[in-house]
Image (cartoon, rainbow, N blue to C red; front, top):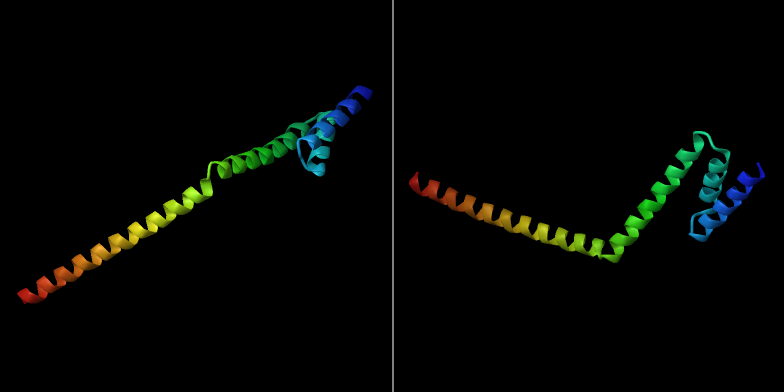
Length: 101
């Protein structure tokens, strides 16, 4: 049993060194040392949280938010231009119909 407790402390210290919050590190370290079904669940939860953080960091490094903002502006500009063209065409058609009547 002493071996499991030592692993618990090592895992806790390693996770804290990696920047994992104390509560998450403690819950995972305790669950893994205790074994059972709680270990994978707690570990998966923290792993998902960290994966999400990594994805967010990588997205920001590659300029993701700025790219999305530029794409959204372009899309809005295109929609406005298309609407203007439709309106112009509809007015022209209305004038044509009015002239024939």
